[in-house]
Every structure is written in structure tokens, then in C-alpha cells.
Amino acid sequence: MFIHSLFDNHPSILTLPRYGVIYSLLPEIIIDLNLERQIDLFIKKCPGIFDSSKEYFGNITGVATGRFGINGDQDLFVDVNDFKQRLYDMASEELDQNRQISRRDFFLLIHLAYGLCVKNQDISQIKYVFYHPHSHGEWEILTSDFPDLYFMAMTRDPRQDWVSWKKIHALRMGRDASKIPPIILFLTAKSYSNNCHILDNLIGKLKPDHIRIIDLELFHVMNKTAMSHLCSWLGIDFDEVLMQSTFNGQPWFGNATNLVKASSFNPTMKRATWRDELSPVEIKIINSLLPGSISYLHYDIDVDQHYNGSFEVVHNGVRYESKLLLLFHCFLHIAGNPLLIFPGIETEHPIGERVGARVRNILGLGRATRYTVKLFRQLMGEKLNNMFNTLASNEKRLLGSKPSPQLFVDYYG
Image (cartoon, rainbow, N blue to C red; front, side, top):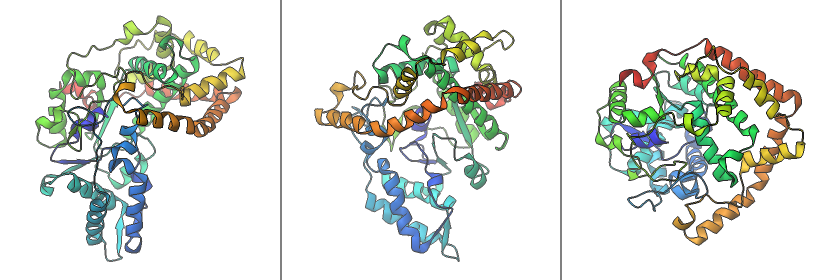
């Protein structure tokens, strides 16, 4: 979200104030008779880009620490009818001789129509759409439809990643970070390994110099140097707007787990705090579970000396004798404590909004329960063994496949 917000206001880039899948929601081909319906479906599926209070940025019980504007108390609004008319007119002009428009062109026109609703733009300057799907499910069709796409992979040392996730889970569960259920460390490591595995596959599909891997902490320290390099890489002019977080040109104050508002780089950010914030056991377990991921992303680890015994330690630690306790921990992982709201946010929102947020949390228990039962079944018996085997297989592959240093932004800084 941070790098997305930095590129928001650049004159050569179009983007939406949203993360999440869009491209795969669109049909491969849209015919003229179905054009208006497809525009209406897009508006229905992505309501937050027209009223930011309706999706991620309006979730006052999440980790978003503010809305928009100088005081961080505003929502974003874009006129739906204006957008719909602009998109319909432009898409109608782009219909081919068969009265059809491709998903690729429709996707680009969505961004253009939206951008023109937000502000007057010199269309001749626009070179890129910045798309943040926050999901791995679309790379196959994206690389097929956009074979020249540029990809920025934001990363974090998995040990530092666990420091952050512990804080998030502690907030969501209403408990001390030292009392996070053991199963959650394993699930976090499994997700991290899967992400690296997918990244490795994606790199093989992109042009050699069309990817940059960026460590979040190092990105903050490099700040303008890093952004200048990315501009040179993309072939666009550096602009000072790249140094501030915005969406639709309005200041945005981030989603840090410490709930401290910030809308720009922190060049004094302390790196590798995991060495002080994690216990020796946690460090050994993560090193044992993710030696390939750590090495693959050029983080420090002695792969010959990583703690082999920890693999069995965590394997035994997530084998619950009590199925009821496992079910409860799965629920905490999925839903947190639905009666809680993150500390520090209570005073920032009117009582009506706070009550509404609590009600929505409680009403969402049905969906959370379904996901909980599914996860519970995955963590039982042989299925748990299969998850460990998959993780081990991914890590073994990653140990033998290391990206070129030229793909990492710090290589140029």
C-alpha cells in the first residue's frame, strides 16, 4: 500500500484507490449490447473507489490509521454517473468491427475514465496503469495480456514480517503478543514460502529487466534514491509528488501496525529489529522453516547452520492434543476477537460509526466460522503433514534458485 500511494499522483500514471482483484473479474470479451451492464457490474463490485468508506479505507477496525486529507478525517468521493458516462463513451469508440472490446482495453479505459473524473489530465503524458491486485491468482492472464508489464515486488525479511504480524494478531485478538497461538507462526511461514515460490515462477515469465524487488525497511532508508531509480527504470520523470502518500491526490496517513500516522518516508527507520524483538526460539524456528525464502531474497542466513531441529519443534507444536483448542485458535486466526476494536481508533470516529463497525464484525461471524472450519480440517492429521511437506519442497527449490542482484533496488543505491 505504501509504494502504491507514492505513485498515485504522478502525471504519467493512472491508478485506483483500491487494492484487490479487478482484472479477472472482467470478461475476456465485452460486446456492445452488454457494455452498459458490464460497467454497472464493475461499479457494484468496486464500490470503494467511488466512496472510500465502503471498502478497505472505511474499515475502522482494520489497520488503516486514517482516512484522507490534511487531518486524515475525509473520505474519497467520485461521481458514479460521471464515471459511467465517460467509460461508456470511450469504450463505445473503441469497439472493433465485430462490435467488441477486449478485457485489456476495457481495463485500461476504466483507469482513464476514473482518472479524468478525479482531475484534468494531459492524456498524452500517461504511460502506465499502476495495478495492485494484492493476490497471486491473476498473473497467468496478466502476463498473457500484458507481456511487457513491469513488476515491483515489495518484500520484508520473514523474521521482521513475523514481528509485524505478531502485533497485528495481538491487536485483533486482544492479547499480548507473547501469547499468539503457535499455529499462527506456522501458517505465516507457510504463506511467506508460498509467496516466494510464486514470485520465483513469475520472474521466469517476465522480461529480464522488468522486475524490481524492494525491501520495505531499506526502501524507507533509501527513499528519494530508490524512487529516482524506479523512475529511471520505468522511463518517467521524477516528480516530488512521489515523496508523499496520496490517493486521488489527497494525503493518506498509512496503515502501520503501531497506529502512528505518517504520509512519507521514514529515513531513520531502524532495520532488523527482529534481532531484539523475537525470542531465540522464534528466530531458530523461522530460520528452519524458511531457509530458502530468506536466502532467495538476499537476507542474511547461514543456510548450512540453520536450526534443523526447529522444524520438528514447530511440527510437534502445531499438533494439538485438544481439537477444541485448535478450533478456537483457528477462529482467532481468521476472525480475531469480534468484540474488540483496535486501540487508538475509538476516539477518532463518531459513536455511530464505531457501533456500526462492531455490528458488522458480529454479523460477519458466519463467514468467519465457515473459514475456521475449513482451516481446522486442513490442520488435522495427514493434511498437516502434506502442508509441511509442501513447505519443505518449496524451500528446497528456493535454496537452489537465487535472483540476480540486479533485480534488487538496493543494488543501485
